[in-house]
Image (cartoon, rainbow, N blue to C red; front, side, top):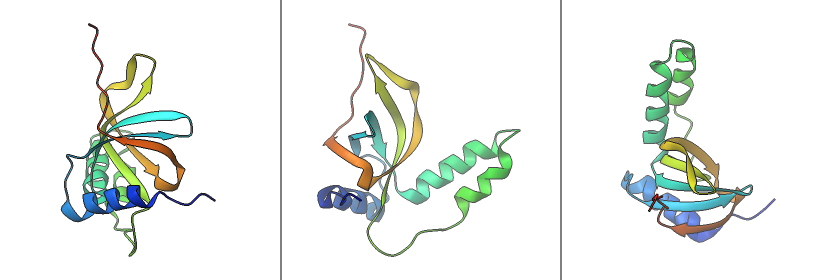
Length: 119
C-alpha cells in the first residue's frame, strides 16, 4: 500500500474547505494522465447525481451520490470535473468528464491542466 503524497492531500483538503472548483490539476494514475479542475466532493457528487437523474435508464443510481458518506480525516480522493484523460493529442472526452481518483494511486502530479490546439 502506497503512502499518499502529503502535499497533494493538503491541496485536496484546501479544495474541500474552500468549496472552490477553480483548482486545475494534472495527475498520473495507473498509467493514465488525467487533467482538469478539482471540485469539493459534495459538489462533484451533486453534479453526478444530476446527470444520472436526467438519464432514463440510470436515474435510480442518482440517490447513491446524494447520500452523505463523508468521514472525518484528510481527503482520500480527488474529484475532477471538466476533466479529460489525455491520449496522444486528444483529450477524452473532448467536453470533459467527472472522475474520482484515489490520492494514494497518484504517482505524479502538477498544478494546472493541459489544453489542446490544432495549430
